[in-house]
Image (cartoon, rainbow, N blue to C red; front, side, top):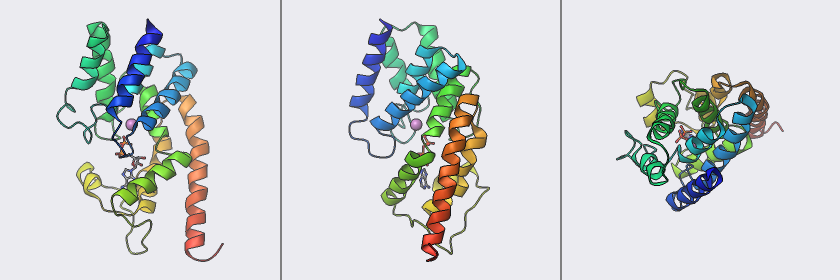
Amino acid sequence: MAVELIEQALTYVREKFEKEYSGHDYFHTLRVFKMATRIAQGEDADLETVQLAALLHDVDDRKISPETYENQANARSFLLTQGVAADRVDRICKIIREISFGGNSSTPSSLEGRCVQDADRLDAIGAIGIARAFAYGGNHNRHMYHPDIKPNLNMTKEEYLKSESTTINHFYEKLFKLTDLMNTQTAIKIAETRQAYMEEFVSRFMDEWNGNR
Ligand code: ADP
Ligand code: NI
């Protein structure tokens, strides 16, 4: 039964994200699912709760589904259709709400939520994180780098959402901050190697930009 439920959720998100190329695509969800599974095992969290929350964490995303963002209606109706008990559905929806709230601010109240939040954040850093950042920048007509546009390290949430900054600035404005925001020991270890790799990347990028390498 449990394996079947995960299979159903995988099929549901694959269909849901079929036409999404925004960086919140099916493969992002799949990576978060795999990473959340690894973190949950390292932290002794409830595996099925973590896996379902990971699979459904973006189906009510503000950008993808603004009309269901507030109440997680897509995740909720999927789970209820699958016969998941109401209190379990509430717990999973709470995780989804807590990890998306404010983009990158609050700490989820459950261990399971902290595992999923870490997995989602890990997908924004390292090699995949670099690729996603430049894909996003290209999609939004941003400069890769511009010497006159400086990073703004203390943006409000509104400023962040409206920001037209460069992709290199995004490393300073968000990506380099994520390692310190990881909740679990399992994720902290993974984040540290990814962080070092990104720092090396930005340093080489600047060296090449300046003709020094
Ligand atoms: P989330 O908060 O779920 O990570 P976002 O929509 O903020 O979702 O980000 C999706 C992906 O796009 C992430 O990999 C993120 O780093 C990247 N991204 C978001 N904003 C920018 C930006 N201004 N410049 C470059 N990449 C960005
Ligand atoms: Ni996500």
